[in-house]
Image 1 (cartoon, rainbow, N blue to C red):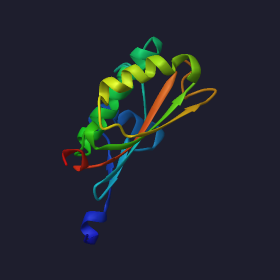
Image 2 (tube, rainbow, N blue to C red):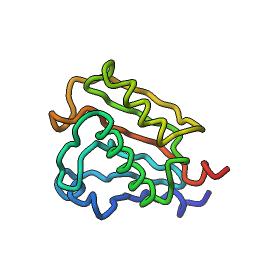
Image 3 (cartoon, one colour):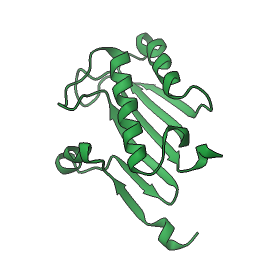
Length: 138
């Protein structure tokens, strides 16, 4: 692999520019075929948290999907998920059901962590991912 392929690229879909501008982080960073996606949460276009774990999980996975697309990848390229839950025991069955909708087979590795709080008090889950562009096509 030549050095040109190893240049660091910040990924910020237009709908996420507010995060980059206000909080100074990229939604994802790509180096070569590797993509590290920042935590995605269940908020709508007005920055309002969705109600309930299933709705938040769907919005977070949709955001993950959008960031991956902007990085030249898709959900099939995800090799690792890390999820952070404020109500891990109570929410896990519903969250797992939503996760299985987005990953019906070829499951990525997954670590779920219980935490006391996320950036907004109404948020119940945050999803990080690592992907390798093109690996899901094989």
